[in-house]
Image 1 (cartoon, rainbow, N blue to C red):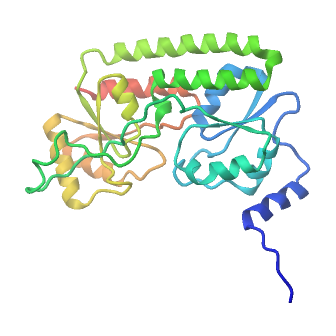
Image 2 (image 1 turned 90 degrees about the horizontal axis):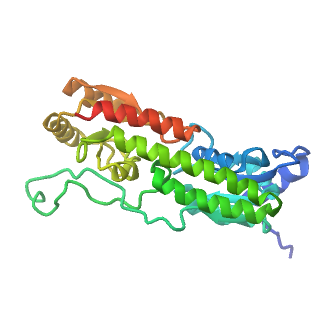
Image 3 (image 1 turned 45 degrees about the vertical axis):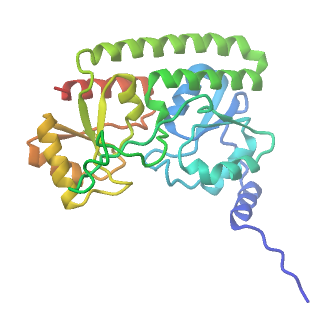
Length: 301
């Protein structure tokens, strides 16, 4: 009787790529590292400068919640010295497999020292439940969007610094000097954003996907999400959101470029407002956060 040896499909795919691929996605004279999402590339480059070569797992336009690495990416991991994880949902499924591709690659959990909070969700009342839920929100899991808060990015930057210095001790002082400059820029951004939101504490902004919880917490704001457990709201829920927007004087509905604008446009039309884009996954993290803060600041009345 013959026994068939079966190997997981993803392992076969990786072995095939390794066999046929003669190229190298990394520069030979730089420290090769991987990150999960695009903003992390900015963080690592600010500290590593021209000493590092950073590859991003979740490509622009893709969702960090549902992304599946390509066979080529899994093969490229065999050359990486570090993988900087941040706690986005796709890592729950893939991080163990990612680590298994390269036993010599260190997986750095940059969210390790960060206290995460519940993902905000607008609570849609009915006459029987209204008294049971105060505050208008209920948790739908932990919020992974820790890269949108400057104070939390400083914590992540320290983890990145330590990992780069350990992987490349020859350039320890250079990494340290770059970190000091980056840290000062984060502090200045934080101070500028606090000034932008002076006098606006407690005001709310409406977003489709609740990505801005840590940002709102850092500057005393409130985000009002449209999305209900990852889905567009039903007609009755839309009606409540429209009434809430009118009551609070909300005139701008913010949407990520990666999501549908249908619900946001409907609400904006009903309140005589407008839809604006706020991308949490832009590569130029610092400039992007300044731009979005200006948009939020102008929208908050």
